[in-house]
Image (cartoon, rainbow, N blue to C red; front, side):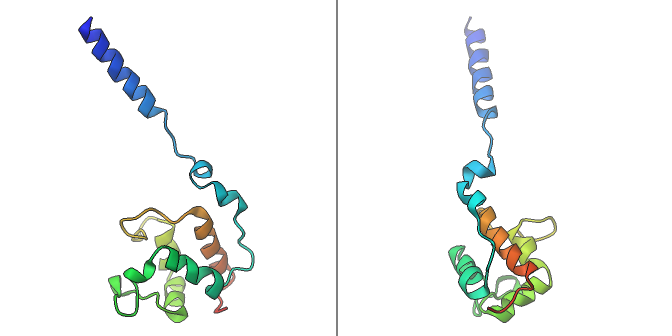
Length: 123
């Protein structure tokens, strides 16, 4: 009887834990309302970089990985070599950013992508 009770408890725990899932729509409910039109470096990209504290590791003083995101020219360099989007989108072969932290929410990633697709203008 004791063995059956232990087995039942383990089976119940596995079923309960195995039934969880992470749907992006539930984790980040605002992604459906993500406005990617009219993104600009000064009004969109800079605040996103600030929101995720990118300058803690990638300022003009602290250039982790020899990368600075301190100004437009530095960010544009990372856009041109493909490292910015690859890193924030956690693509294979890129250092995932923010390093050791959670991935940016999908709306912010979409805004960065829209800006890059528009030619990453200095606006």
